[in-house]
Image 1 (cartoon, helix red, strand yellow):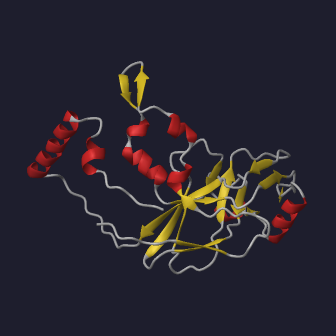
Image 2: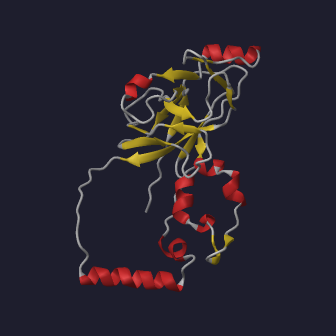
Image 3: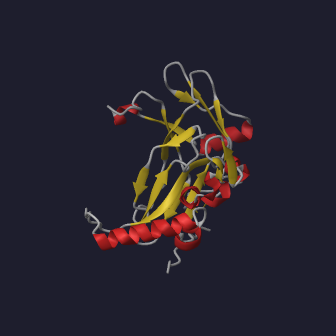
Length: 242
C-alpha cells in the first residue's frame, strides 16, 4: 500500500500586493488539447480506435507530481550583444522585478560541447524552497507530453530533503529572438516536479525461461480479449498528488 508523504513549498519572502501562485498538482494543469480530444478517433487505415486519452501511462506521466508556476508576469528581451533585459509592464511590475529578479542569463560556456551550447539559456529565479521527506529527491523535467510548450527546462535531480535553498530552473525558450520580447504570464508552468525515493539499484539481465514465457503469453491473451481497457482495469495503480 502507498504511504502518505508531504512535500512542502516555502515562499522565501513576501511579494507585497502580488498574489503568488504556489506550485500545484500537475493534474490541475493538463493542457486543453488533451481535455478536448475524444476517447475514440477515426483513423484512415485502422478505423475507429482509442486515442491517447485512453492511455493510462501517457496520462500518468502528465499528471504525476507538481508543477512550478511563474510567480509573476515576465517580459524577456534578447539584445544584440546577446544579453537580456527585462522590460517593465508598469510601476508595480517594476517594483516586483527589482525586488526579486525573475529571470537571469545562464552562461552557455557551462555546457561546452552540448548541442544547445549556442542557444540562449535562461534561468527562472524560483522563489520557493522545496522540502521533501527523508530519502526523497525532486526530479525537475519539462511538462510531460506537452511538446507544444515553448519553455523547455533542463532536467535536474535535487536532494530536496537535504538542500534547504531555492532551486533555480535553467530553461530554453524556443521563441526567444533578438529584439522580439517574449511574455511569460504569471501562472505559466515552468517545469514539472516529481518526488523520487532514493534506493540502491542493481541491474540484472536475463532470458525468460519457458515458464516465464507462458506467463507473458497468458497476459497477452487476456489483453487481446479486452484490448481497450485491460491495463487500466487490472494493472494500473492510482497515484495521489494533492
